[in-house]
Structures are given as C-alpha cells and as structure tokens.
Length: 177
Image 1 (cartoon, rainbow, N blue to C red):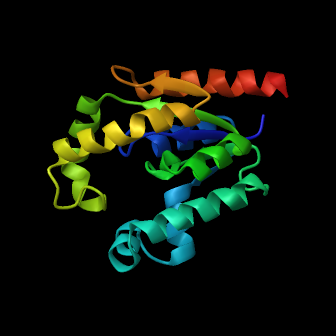
Image 2 (cartoon, rainbow, N blue to C red):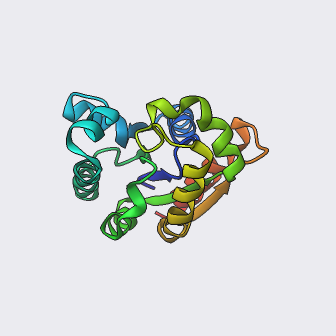
C-alpha cells in the first residue's frame, strides 16, 4: 500500500495510534514533529521561540517535499503535526505521499486532553486553551477534511477500536496496489 498518513488536531492521538498500528503491522513509523526536532536539535517549542512559526511551517513543508520523493516510511505510518495541513502546498504534497486519514476528535475531547498539556504546545502557551482550540479548529477543520482520504472519528472509542479502523483502511489500500 505504501504510506498511511495520520492528520488531525494536536491531542487527537495521531502518534499513539500510529505507533500501535506500525507495531502491529511491523511497519516503519515517523512522527514529523519528532523528525523535525531531531533535525533541528531542539524542541518544537524552542523552534517557535527562537525562529518563529513561519520558520517551523517551512520545515514542515520541506519535510513533506522530501517524503513525497523518498522511501522514508515507504511502507509505513506517518503522524503529522497538527498544523501541517494548513498550507495548501502541504495538502497537495500529502496527496502524493499516501493515504491521508483524519483522526477527528470533538472540540470537547481535545480541550479536555490539552488543558493539562498546554505548556508543551507552542500555540497554546499562555492562552485560554478552550478559546484557542475553538479558534484553531475554526481555521483547520475544513483543511483537514480537504486533505483527508478517510476520516476516523475517535470520540467514545477505545484505542483498539480506532486502531482496528486504521487497520481496515490500511488493508483496503494494500488490496488496491
């Protein structure tokens, strides 16, 4: 099949689901935020503080450009940073990289998950988490849907239920190729 790419808002569980899926199918796994941190030698928060959001978004685009023409996770799972699909160029690149699955969570679930972890999220630092989640989701929801080949809703589901849905998507894609 190639790649299955997990997109969605921060806190939706993309990395968790991706790691489990990759282990169950013995696939390679890449988390774009972790790959960028490794390449830059510092955290996403540090990148935002030192060089700004535009610089970070440029790094995301550069990573996708490499991914679209390389064997990185060729048969694997890629978890995207929550803002990666915001740029039109990134959405276009994603379509060339593999099957894009939107891990969709309700705003209520995202707020609940992010309230205690907001200090680690550059876009939520010092903000009212609930208001910022609403604002960002207003901006991003249609963009996530635009990039997605499939949508998996996670509210009210256990981890294994979501992973099983992702397995079915992956298996359907393998049968086509």
